Image (cartoon, rainbow, N blue to C red; front, side, top):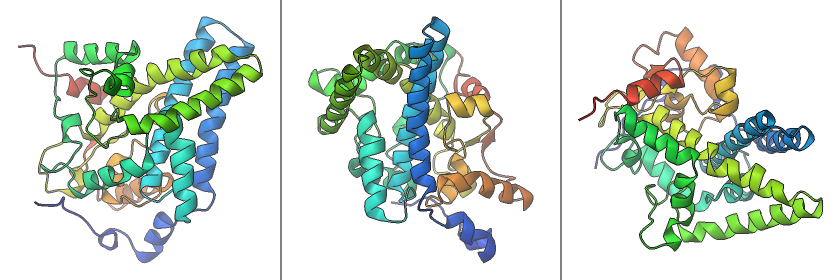
Length: 313
């Protein structure tokens, strides 16, 4: 059982460079969680104040992207990066990031650390997510339609309650459809519904929380998975090529790739580095001329084109 190849930070950075890159912060991670919730509230308020099809579409996309943002920050907590106090890190990651989106930090952490240990090896539990690629354009189109029409959401979240509707996510993944994860999720949603009903906005729970979660959230989660590991070679010996770093402009960061999740090659190189330092690490590696073999893509569209490049049978 071979583990993925590693590179020591000391081989790439001086001690003076590495110290600030690896340092935990007592406030940045908490500020990012607060930012995710602030964007969700502001996007919802935008539609409540100016209700029209355009503001609703924008609200759904922004809220769905920040629901992904909460899952990404839960992932950060799985690496102990949200806060240097592990109790604070885990409480925030579990109850303010994971539970609202139907995930579980406690169940996700061991699964995800196994993914890092065996990245792109036979024992990597995430291989099933990248295995279908490259696929055809028609297949990718069908996946996108299932995401945007709520079919993926229903299958992942409620499949276990209906015998044959099993989630296609591996057990332990962020959204694997395990029944045990639904209780905190249902409690959170009950609280949201009661709170919104108290101010006369009961409909906002469905229109501005569930609809984004059932449509845009599954889509951008899929795009994230594709960008990170699709078309990455199995048993890759080069640690710079265990994952892909994808360029993201400000629109992509707002609607697809929040909180530096696009710097995934760097994350696999330095898995305990706080996510907000990944862009700086990338710039330092570029300046040192160390990114020659790194797996990169200029943007999410280019990754999708490559991932759907298989000719129809």
